[in-house]
Image (cartoon, rainbow, N blue to C red; front, side, top):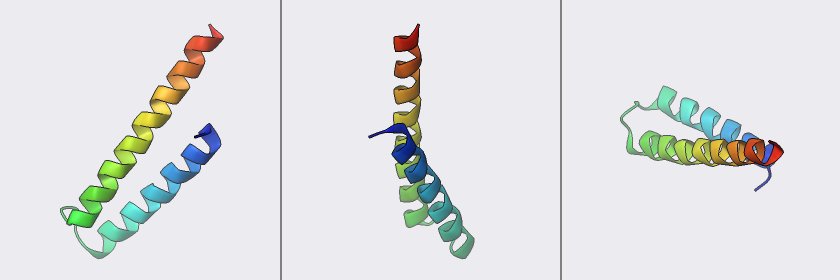
Length: 57
């Protein structure tokens, strides 16, 4: 996945999680699942960008 698509997916997931939490609760199963998905996307982004930085050095 390219960095720009990953950032777009992170932003979409973040907004969906915030909207869902605003209408339910932070402990709602769907919110927790969305948070877990967001964590995975963020970890992927961090791994991708750190790998790119290492390759540039």
